[in-house]
Length: 259
Ligand SMILES: NC(=O)c1ccc[n+]([C@@H]2O[C@H](COP(=O)([O-])OP(=O)(O)OC[C@H]3O[C@@H](n4cnc5c(N)ncnc54)[C@H](OP(=O)(O)O)[C@@H]3O)[C@@H](O)[C@H]2O)c1
Image 1: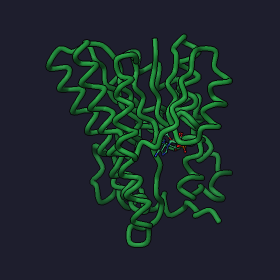
Image 2 (image 1 turned 45 degrees about the vertical axis):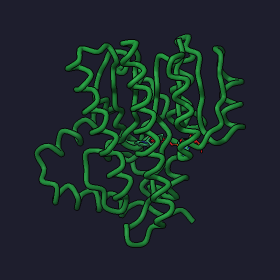
Image 3 (image 1 turned 30 degrees about the vertical axis):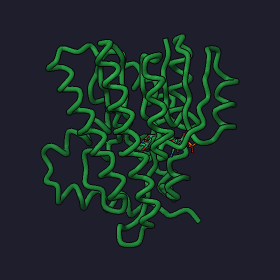
Image 4 (image 1 turned 90 degrees about the vertical axis):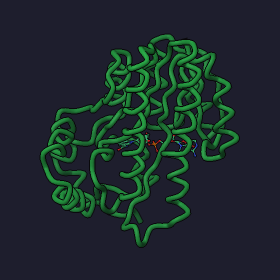
């Protein structure tokens, strides 16, 4: 049993590698920071193959498909966000984000799905976000990139279902999680972090990862950890987009750019 996980050097990918290893899976751990991947390897009891790769480099990304025949699970977890209003954010950084969150995820999903379909087995877990469901002022391109992940995954899942394939596609849509995500996006909840509600909303990475893996094995298509987040996802069905956009703007504007 083997799983390939992108973004295994920290946060959700790191915890999912731990959880699957505890279940007896060998891990192919992919990220850019070699020392982090080596640290992960030293902590896990099962076999770990470290692949130090930048998935925005299409050659490195496509080469990962060679691993599809030996893996049972692909987890597309690598990703990041760019915070700020669209007219002031850095275009190059945003394009890099689109390459990571969309282009690389699309490439890996497609290549692995083709091979999994041929042999009629395998799981793909794509990490989107609760952001997938909403317009995302002050995080517009990030939210839009996660909508892509959600819709791509749902579309593929339906195609495979219609073909009676045993390949399972799941998409994880968490709200805020304690990881390095905020540091990379250079943003924090600021003073709000002390607020009791905010503390309740930001979930531990291990807890989110455990929930995601459990639901993935049960074949759940859209996975939303946490009751508050499931309510939020439901509300978006009845609240008009314009109103959702102003609420999201309000929430995002409470965040602080880190110095
Ligand atoms: N934390 C949250 O609040 C939250 C909420 C919803 C969804 N998510 C999603 O969850 C996923 C995991 O993020 P996280 O919260 O765990 O953040 P994180 O701790 O910053 O982890 C991000 C991972 O992505 C990897 N990565 C980024 N760019 C890469 C590239 N070009 N090539 C290879 N690996 C790359 C990083 O590894 P290297 O830097 O070593 O390459 C790191 O392992 C992301 O897709 C994020 O959008 C997070």
